[in-house]
Length: 327
Image (cartoon, one colour):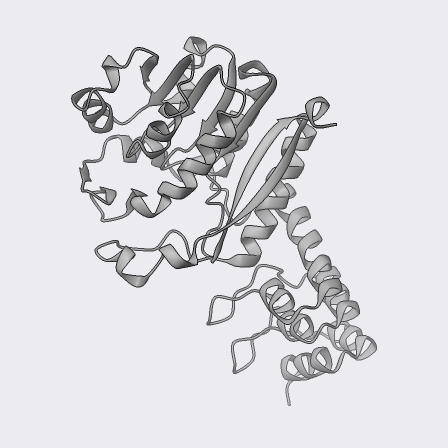
């Protein structure tokens, strides 16, 4: 048995001393066995929190994935091993704060927002698609958008939405009859369709065409703000959050489409905690409201879509407000 197999066996047995000795003798902490599992996954699956700590301290990748797209955190979470789960969660949060390896993409890799804005899009009754058959927005999100609208409109007044898409959240916002309803939309075809369908004629609606980064000077102060852009990354969301203190009134409510790492349950939990932590550092509390979505996501929903952008049974709707308002 080679050292990698020995390390996996020691991890399964919860033998921290042997795990450490094997690592010191050159065993590879990122080793995958014949089942596609790492020593960290084995330790997490069986709840050996002490071994999980040892492996992480010696550089075991917390975000490695098994053939079934599960990480060590998923194994701990699914098996109900709370201590091992929390160790992995903290490791993931710390790693993402420093490196941002999962949901952040370096700007040097190209401006995908620009790519999307130059792309042709197609509208149908239940989806908005780009030219590569990737879904920009889909009708299954309607109940989520209605919940977001209810949250950001809870105080009435002046509402801002970044990203029109299919108009699901804006249609819901209109039901609350805000004093003003400002919509920022950057895609020329979506903007054209907005005008064709009468959004520019609504008395309380102001449409601003352009990327939110380019039209900040045209924005005012709002009682409720919703953010849902396509073709951007976590870094763009973080950048928008830096502007919240100037955009959101005291007592206001902010929310955003929480599609962060929607393909993996544990990564999603990591990013829910990460964004909450970063918003707290900016002076905002974040409540994550669980909404079940499993029943509205049958396989037929994704027919004609190149890849699913959501794989989870629960959606966590963020409701953010200034910390002094929540105390």
